[in-house]
Length: 441
Image 1 (cartoon, one colour):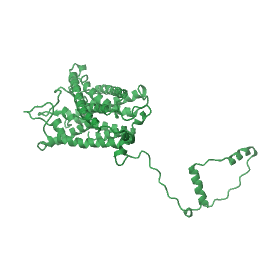
Image 2: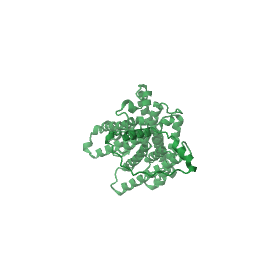
Image 3: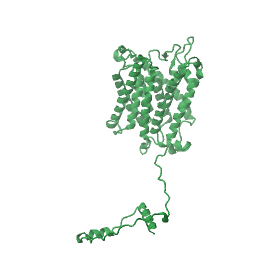
Image 4: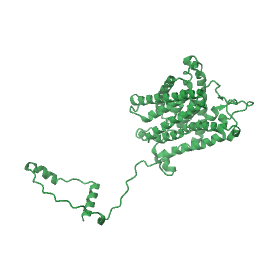
């Protein structure tokens, strides 16, 4: 899961303009370093600090600040790191209220504000929906970048490095096998190993179908009506987000259906943001927000109770949908409210948006050292010092060349034309001619 931050870094760096590459990478470093320190001081306590049996609390935990009590149960250190990586991932997407939406009760059973019937195996809701809602709130409050929707400059905002985006997507996909199968908590017996196996299969199928669908839709149906590799990447991520909640509760064919609809919802959501002129640089809301919501709600439809893997969907006579819908509303409202309370004061304080000069020159040039992430062009060729004339070896003597026979009369006009023709010299030709002249002298 921690390695996903390498994926986010590559994906985001490739998606922004070249002149802001270092700035977005600095953001990722701050999220991880500051995020884990906050998780150490109070985040773990809010999320997983088990209340005592005499003080029940279904809203948030309030024990284990700065690892208080961990030495009495040293297995807590491993659990702290794994869950901290999840929390930092939510922060990377945009803004995370993970701590108050998930915690463990005194019996060690996972519960939440939604009741014991709520299903979200690996975090479509408490990680991705939280981050996605934070992203849309932030993007709406900050406003579009200067010139983003001007007809004469729209192409200037394309991703500057598609290879970075693709490599980042593969890194994230790889990390998801820790995110989803790793959420089984253990694989030491046949039951947990088999559960991790079905989770891994579902985590593979859903992004495959989602990515291919988006790639095909953008090639044949929607703009740009060309092969859009960046769209392919986001389609894959949308499928991964959509299956994260239900990866342990559905069959593989159901995972395919969830991924297929996830790809469609991503595409429609991306088009909606463009229509509303909300500048979501990496499509965080369509990928994480919309598909985080779909991942939760999908469990209201899919999952057969008779299979014994925890599903309880409407398609099989279950009643899971109302619980999942309630969870979606609470998570979205909570994350939206917290994000608004953070972003609005920052906007009024003038600390949220870069000025026009920063946007024109780029944050890398304005406040980073060095002032660019890497060289965008190959270095100029090294100038080789010229040898002295006397140091240049004389050419070896050549045998005399026999005089050419006179040209036939019928070709004399062509010969005269070639001899009298003037061939323009380039600057390189002139330099070579000048050098040859000096050598002969």
